[in-house]
Length: 580
Image (cartoon, rainbow, N blue to C red; front, top):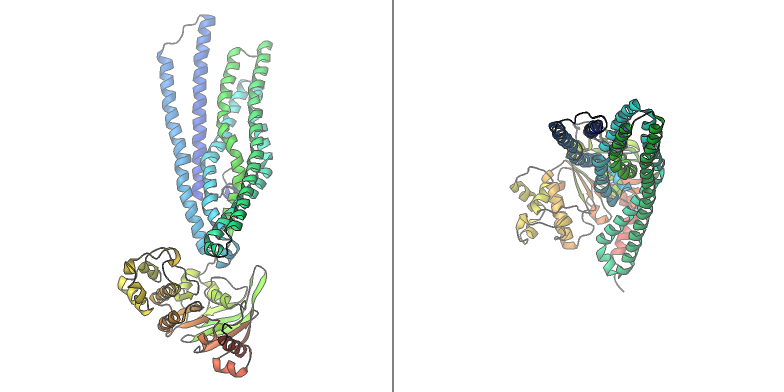
């Protein structure tokens, strides 16, 4: 019952399965204790009836009082244990699940994130886990406990009278059969609702991220109208889904309650036939009130359990995506980067085909080429942010696909055009380059990256919060913090992806001064669109349509008058362009 299929079906951790077992166990105990209370009531009523009809003496007052006190104590203890085994333990499961998902996402290759947008992943981490938390705490333990306790009670009732037992319990399997028959409808409705909700989240996120562009182009009304349509559609889909599910749930509840009527009819017939007495019918009517009670909450929420399958499937999709793994040690002989007949496809589309070149240690190797030629892809493959489709990439003779990405990246510093900063202080943003670095080491890296100039102007210096993604800094200042971070790390391999492309002349000069300190003696792979940026490179690799078109020193390529020469000439001509 609680095997691997159950664990996957409800996206539970191993501890979560154990918690569900505890919840089901204590639900069974609670239901049996409550049924014991019904039995006590029956015995008291039976004794009272015997006194009225046969003249037997009524038991003393101490017996019902003692039984009531005993029942109250047992009920309190078992309900407390049930609460702890369901609600109390589940909160720990929610925490463990979110950490488990986050850890899994941390180990997934970068290519995975290109297929899932931020709103979708956020919905999985927050919305889907919240939905599953409700199922774990309110449904699973109660439902499976009700199954088991009802089976035990049914056996006892069959021993008393099989006709009354069937009349009492026939509605339970029929009601749940109807609900389980509606599972496909509930799942499809949940998928449509989830998709509509993600479209709303995407629309809100897009509007917030592009608010300046929307205002600048006077598109507020159009964007808000589009968002209104998405919200209305989400509401309609949700109402249709909940209405359809509600019909099945209420129909199941009515069917189950018909057991009361059939029990009275069969019981009355049996009394007239002389097979049973009134007290046995009274016992069954008491039992009915408690047999159905455990299913009341489950019936209301079992539809949510069906809907939760969509959330569980989305979580399992993350768990089951292969991670980028490898050896925990990396001991290369030098830091030459060798691309050996590398091919790479993204979403069935070829990006690189049979690419081979070597970026030598102590040299600057530049990747140039038209937009979409695969330059950034090469940089990401070199750091194993993605894995190659064919061929191999070696660093110091070691195939990087055999090394754990986190271990490999200890030898890499990366400075990209799109700098990512955190909503923290200047000091802590730079310290990301090497956790545990002293304040003085951070300041030294900042000085080498020409950060001192603007840090002195900040109200709290290095302790100034810089806002989300460095919102309080200019583009050049953010770039210099990124370089300071790389300087602090002092890794033997440096990847630069258009680190100065969007800067003005003054900032570009300062950033290039900082870069010259960073690159000394390292294996450097530079991606550039400006040809003058790579004039001092030791080697240039020209990519076109995912292939190596030519490679060599700048002088050699200019002498060949090939693609590189053509690109240089085009940029020289465009440099003379001016407003006419």
